[in-house]
Image 1 (spheres, rainbow, N blue to C red):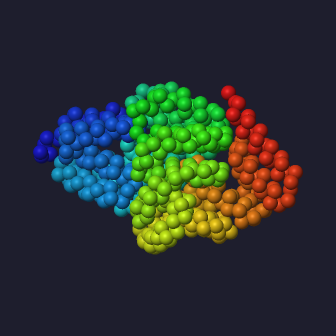
Image 2: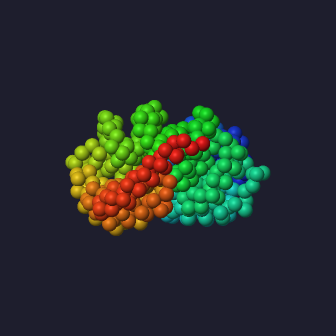
Image 3: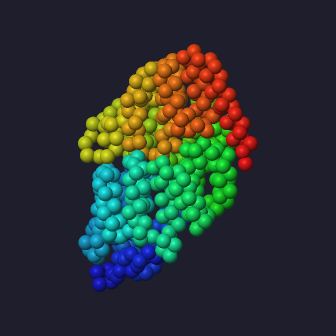
Length: 474
């Protein structure tokens, strides 16, 4: 197949795609749309595109992106080979500047340079603001760089090119909703998310964005009803549905429905006990929160800790490393914790990758704090975690996901009998999230530590009233 056989077809948003035939371009567009919708058949569409034209440069690039999204070391190596293939095919057959920009972004990501990857894609979006793949991948990268304002700015810069007449506008509204939520603009986030759902009721990312708003505003009953009202439309979604059910569990936990959370965990959140990194982090953080509530979770920790041991040397995302450490600490696997810390120390000493820098900046101290907490050194956990808590955004994930580490800090302060610190941390939580029963119960414990019985009783009463009120809210 020579260059003369190649043409520039256009996708649904008018962007040129270099390929041998229209079928390949159409299948690739379906793959990108399916990816934005977290559809189970995303891979099938990509296979169809590459079957129609195995030497389509952009098709190979998208394949590389998808491999990296699994956040596993072995697949990252395959992605690097795919990036090389895409570059060779672009030289062989020709490619647009946009397509070559994507290959550059993929190559940077394969080198572990997430910052350059995001910057390369942002440059592409200035010239091609309707590049849905660039927009979605950039959204993901800013998310795992812990940069909510960058997510918001990224969407804002392309809004001029999107409206109701442009294909897949609803997905952009969903991205906008989540970027606004992670930037703290909850009112605008909810408006954007609800609009995305009006356009496409099966847009699980938009549903998830509004669920985040309700989590941050402690609207527990509303959150449960919101997810329950939409989940029938998620039948074709992939395992991201487990994460949305994880959100429902957070609402149920605040309402005190421990039996419901355990049933949800078994039947939905960890029903297939997969080794997908998001699925594992869902399970870990949920079991940890249940433990904070004094709930006996039985043997559920074992399978997560077993899987964590297999990924001790991965270090694709520090976010994952920290969750692995939680699983190992919860099961008292001190030898494995030591191995993870030693491996992470070596990784942090490496130069040139974004995540190595994150490990050195905050990831190591976070994992050391978890290790200390697990062995009962609560004062040590406080000393490790308190100085880096404001930098934890850098490990990526959402405010709701990272909150498990902030909760651990408060619990450590309480168990270390650091009364004034526990009071300060509890005050921070109840100020930012006054509708959270869990936060008020912790505040009650802090008041009790400093001997303020009346304030402790008032905080406990506030927690009970909030839980009862949320339970009966419409």
